[in-house]
Image (tube, rainbow, N blue to C red; front, side, top):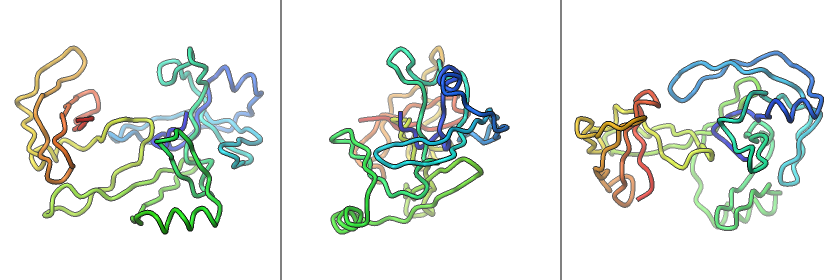
Length: 208
């Protein structure tokens, strides 16, 4: 699985044992909510994705049974850390991850739209942020690019700006959801908004 939101490549305990991973200490990062999380690190000689090889890679090792899909043969998640020195394209239409060379990257740039990005390297972790404008009176927000989530997740302080009434949400077993529509002016077509306390106060506009 390719998960840009994780920051670091993750391997299951079982896979790491089979590969004879070498312990390499630990790393403490933060979830989107600000909660600190510490993971064990190990080193592997190399990892290759889409023809690109990273060497002497530090990976996080943990029980992935609740995070990934071991029944489907998924034993880890590849993060942006192994692609720090590469330009990549996620081709959703053809379900491909493409590592660009100089010529193909120039072609992508000529055919596409250029936007500024913010790259944050923190030890073994790499995260990319894009700017998102939700209102002309506010500066652009820095939004983490997370291919592991199908939702756009915003802090609850932006609910009023987007026209979401928190008091109108319905309480469910694990999360509270509303059936309101986000104002379409800044986020495209009207979008169903889900409000969840499990993410520590996040606003999650999902698919229309």
